[in-house]
Image (cartoon, rainbow, N blue to C red; front, side, top):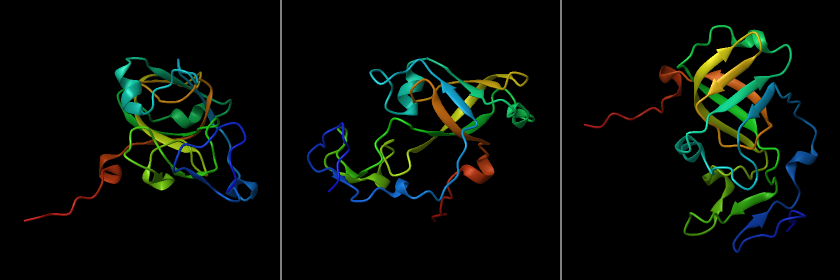
Length: 166
């Protein structure tokens, strides 16, 4: 199995034999950057832990993206989709410290995955539409993390379906 060049594997972890990102079939663009107080040594492990610190975050859109904020309002929940650009992309089985054993990457919210896409539901605290800036409640990523997309969180669309039981 292939291994990431700079980090050793934990017991039970496995890497992809041939990383999928070697194919150039996707064309993504970053619409901005996330500004947080976090770096590699102190970044919270998830959005709940980031919120617990009381540290907010800021989204700074790339030039030309400002008009995409039209219609948003303070207090509105948003889905932030971001690219964990420092994450490993070769792990297919991981051994997180908080689990009782190895788990498949798709059974985890870990940033280490073939496509290191993360998402969190955040709340808008302030909007500077002219500057293309959103102040949000928190985010669990390094300062400068690339932003892929923003979408409004809609309870009629985004809340999971629950089967009726009698």
